[in-house]
Image (cartoon, rainbow, N blue to C red; front, side):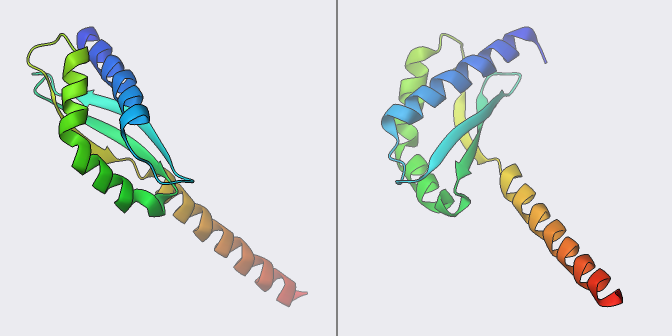
Length: 121
């Protein structure tokens, strides 16, 4: 990946973070974080990877994003000097959700092993 694309990705991530903090209605007790931005080499599209906590609020936040996508795109375009201006697409980074599932499975295994070990005594 070129240095130019890396700089553009970083700029887009920063600007989208600011825009979302100011413009997007987020339900109480929720947190929305821009994890990264990935621009295509031709600069026509950018994937904005988001983390949502708690994950159960995902649907509501995605509805708000969809409703405000045009405004978010407009505000981002005002900040960028690149041509073409990349079209934004939002993606959910569910790494934390997957980590929770794995942690739950490991805890269940630990409990089962503990029970079996106790029964052997």
